[in-house]
Image (tube, rainbow, N blue to C red; front, top):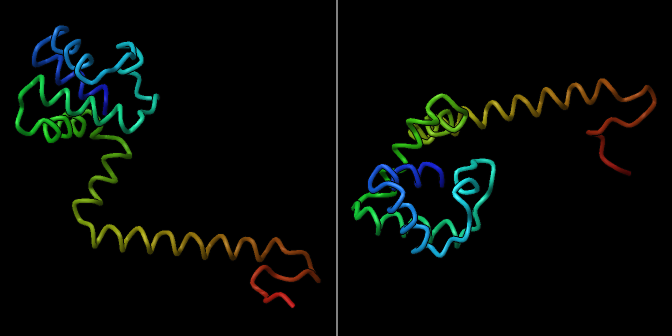
Length: 127
């Protein structure tokens, strides 16, 4: 999300706007580090960067705009699948719950088959 946020700031005002946002956020990270999506943020750094981006761009709904950008970039990923579930929370959660329940039951049946003859099954109460 940080890379998308910086791309939006860059689109607004170029390198100068990005430098200003990083200065306001108090970030000492390099541009390469900040655009690497495999790196994790500390919460305080992330919040500072979001606030700085909103301040530099003066966009009243900066966070929403960055979210729209991120959705467009990640539209074909597993993130998009989770977002689709979030749009239909009740149906999505029920479907996910049912899928997980079936998976747990299937794994339990497989585990029962692996128990050696004469051994206690995993589902038997302990004595």
